[in-house]
Image (cartoon, rainbow, N blue to C red; front, top):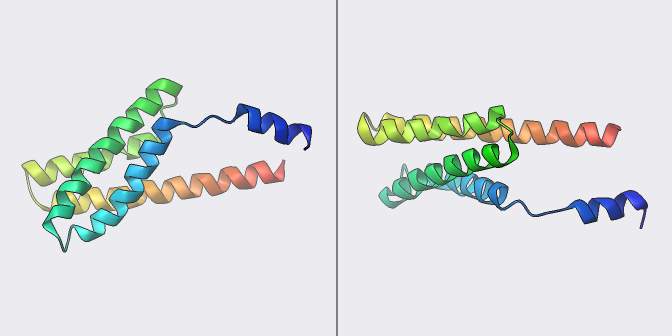
Length: 119
């Protein structure tokens, strides 16, 4: 193996916070679509939005990395609160905000990969 590959393997560490955050986000994307057809999906979607927001704060605090994507993770929680406390359209707001955050995450990841490949 090349020296750079060996050093990358040694530096690799599973980030539990990122795993929880991304897993909750992906599941919430699916359940958010299902919430329009099944009542049980709404409660799971709302719960996953809360898990995603808590894990975003945890990641930001642990790594001192308050990035735009982590702030976007808070917007769906606001939508969930609006959905429960004010009006049902809050859940749709949360779902739309989740898609915006997800698209932001994908674009950021693609840009990072391109930048690393170009170096």
